[in-house]
Amino acid sequence: MKMVITALASMALALSASLATADNHEAPVAPVGMVYGLDVSDPPAFVAAMSKYWNSPTGKQIPGFAILRQVVVAGESPISHTVAVVHPSFDAMDGTFAMNAASDDWATFLQEANGVAEVVSSSMFEATGLGSVENQVGAGPGVANLYIFISVADPAKYAKSWQKMMDSTDIGETDAMLFSIPAGGVGDTTHVVSITGKTVGTVMSQMNDNRADKAFQKFIQEVGDIRTIEQNIVTVDLAIFGNTGG
Image (cartoon, rainbow, N blue to C red; front, side):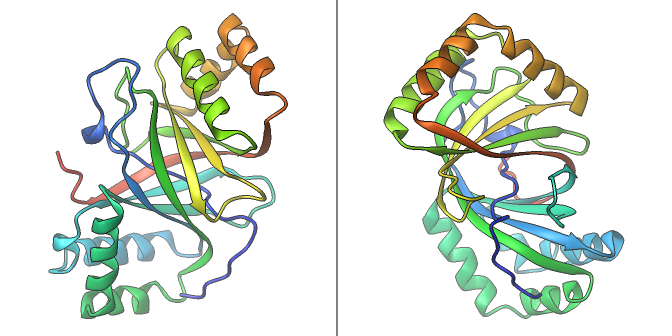
């Protein structure tokens, strides 16, 4: 697949419901991963290639999973889909890279994907462990996600204010998590906030409710001078491949 690194990197992030904790205002343990923004010309062929790889001997050994998402809204970006490959640790991710480097299954996937999907962007993410998974929406076909890409000048202050707001805000039927972006990102992005719900309508309705929430308004005032919103995008989950740990 052709790799084109652009300012459109890091177009989606992912977590599985199987990683969620029972605490209402604690995010899951901090998984890590890679996200690829794709311009897919033949979605059925790409899904077939993904399924073949993840069901191959190599795919079955990968200590993680992949989520394929359709991009609903992304401004002027040519990206139509994203694939987020999630691992429990950087060591696990290194193991996957090593396996793929020597794998005929991976080589076959790249060959089959070539011509039907072009990689527009790539980035790395790490969960901060902050957020709320009260509803344990997780990931799965039809699940909607709003990703808010932000540039943060004072990460410690921002994280403290964000979690304080989360502990005081009714998140309705959505979950929210904060991720750091150690490599890649839209513009000067350092972090991404994900808002996840069962439908796009659920997510956007919750965002409207948040804007009227006093705790949210106070949060906006507290971080106004240390954060800049780089971009918002909306995605819908299509399929999950691999070992979700469930």
